[in-house]
Length: 320
Image 1 (cartoon, rainbow, N blue to C red):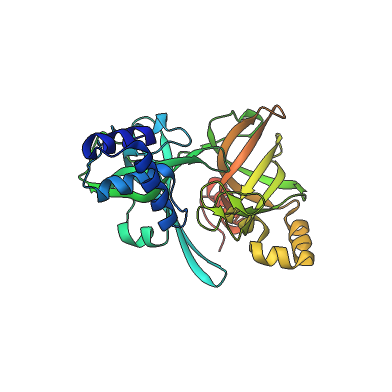
Image 2: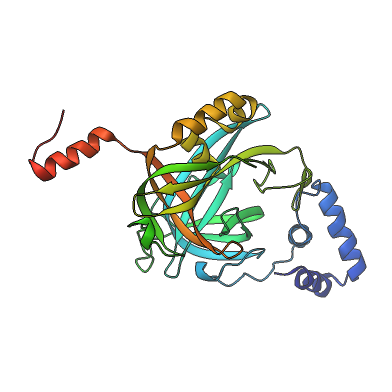
């Protein structure tokens, strides 16, 4: 529900004046150190007053847009990627939960206690209630759980697809925007300017001047974004590597790269001409009128494995 709708509901049930309701919403925000939006504080106030807000209608993943609140979706989990890291001596945990329904795919991001609380598994059908959306650095819309968000595990629903992201093997010269591909290509150039970005330690949003639009003034942490040119022998394309994929490409962590410039330069030199298997999505950059490859998965080329493939095709055997 929108803020004005929640205020109207509280006013109808309690008879409170709008000014008083707004004052109590602001007080609730201060109690929570500004970590919730006015809509979030209004939800909490309504709950404390014993007021049940109307349940939101289900939204199909296809129709998710940035900055939606009170979102309710039903979907199947196709993949979960968890990682642990340390920020200012504190261990953090994040899980990227990939979802699918009969219209599209989306990603839910869970942090720290949320990961343990719900203990989700691939293949499960879930209902997410009171989530909000934001646009991530890939330009895609992702789901987040706020203070009142909740995940419910549901019985299996055969109408929901089981398979998630499908990558099409293709040459770079034939790849089209909006589709996902898997390619084998070499890194032929690396753009070395502006590779470190400040992010909010709470929501992982890229920020400027240590100010997060959601959490206010914060002590930023840093992430790495690498832009490179990849070539498969039939064409080339600009490719973007974000966070863990940037670290995997270079073989060093962000903190280490920031502290040791010589090691970073060595990593840049080592990947030039090196082949990888890249999987990701092509998007159109309208500003520069070019297609770009957003890398979602990366793996090194296993030379022995490739030799065995050739041996199997030619001789029906393998190389040990």
